Amino acid sequence: MVLDSLGKSLRGVLQKIARGSVVDEALLSEVVRDIQRALLQADVNVQLALDLTKRVRHRATEEKPPAGASLRDFLVRIIYEEIRGILGKDRPFEVKPKRILLAGLFGQGKTTTAAKLARHFQKHGVRVGLIAADVHRPAAIDQLEQLGRKIGADVYADRSERRAEEIVRAGLAKLPPHLAVIVDTAGRSGIDAELIAELQRVRTVLEPEEVLLVLDGAMGQAAGRSAEAFHKAVGLTGVIVTKLDGSAKAGGALSAVAASGAPIVFLGTGEHLDELERFEPTRFVSRLLGMGDIQTLLERFEELSNKEAAEEAAKHLMGGKFTLRDMRTQLESLGQMGPVSKLISMLPTLGPAKVDDKQLDESQRRLRRYRAILDSLTPEELDDSQIIKAERVQRIARGSGQRPQEVRALLKQFEMTRKAAHGLVSNRRLRRQIEKQFAGGAAPEP
Image (cartoon, rainbow, N blue to C red):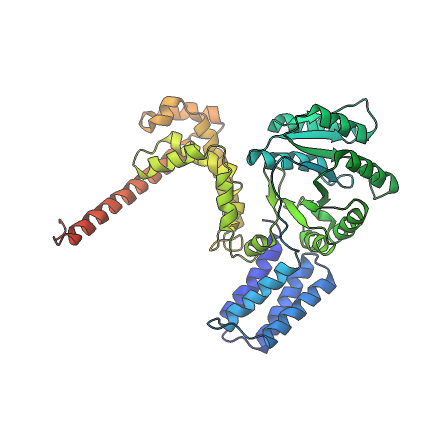
């Protein structure tokens, strides 16, 4: 999860409040110090961290809890609201055919983000056209074309043209008018007059509905200064903060960009093209504090390309007709929804601080092994696990690159799942039968 270290620290603060026998000055001082330390370790600006904790202390001592709320719950709410406040306002982002200009410095991840954004539009049923307007780096054109082929998006490029605005003009004429158009522009090592002039010429031709700045989260607090400079120069409608999955400076980047006045609209949370998330501060802080984000989890399920098959597999499971083919469908769906650790972070009662990282890593590896094994099964084996004997186990192991004991472990797991589901269904049927008999005034059958 993004800002995992900060999340663990803040969840520790909430646990300290919950364990405290009374919310007094001593506990409040300790909580304020812990919040300051957590924010500073996440690279949040010192003054911003001090101001936030000053507001927490003031509100906790001056405001009264609403009727029916305990002082502990009220303090948790204050912390939630103040952290939520430093991350800016929710900024709606409508997914429809529109023109989008991507800007940013060199090495911030613009080209990959263009493909990620295109993939986001595709998942919502909108076709996308990509225009390669980086005239200074031929490798960027090659990369965009490769990514476009990977996601099935139209890409327009002209290696002979050296004027970015003319490439955009020709691309708009070439691409169908009902597409969402994303323009990948050139970057520089710093913000200079030539970069801004080129962006302004491209903007004049494109007439974009969105001007999005792509920023590397590893920049930390410097991301805010970059966002502010671009905002003044070309009028940003939003910011995409990338590479947040492993950055210790992510807190500094998010809070600084929000303070610049340029709204954050997306977060890049990994290298996979599906790892681009809408940034909604309310949900983000809920997950950060371990309060969960069920809505995002449900939205990920809605995005599954094979959702109908996953639902059918679930029906088979509960109906006692579960097969290895159904198991493969379920694992494919789980893989599309993201790493296990990210899914767990969305649940309100579970979070990275409460589940051992080694267990999460092992679960992720086991899922990969199981999917490789299931992909090596024949159609007959997928539909009837009983025919898989010793010789077939050896063949499946060789085909999947796994050990025979891994194949047997999967079969054992499959049988346990099938029997557990069968027992659950049987118990439900028995309970309904008993309830029906009691409702009719008869004694239950022995």
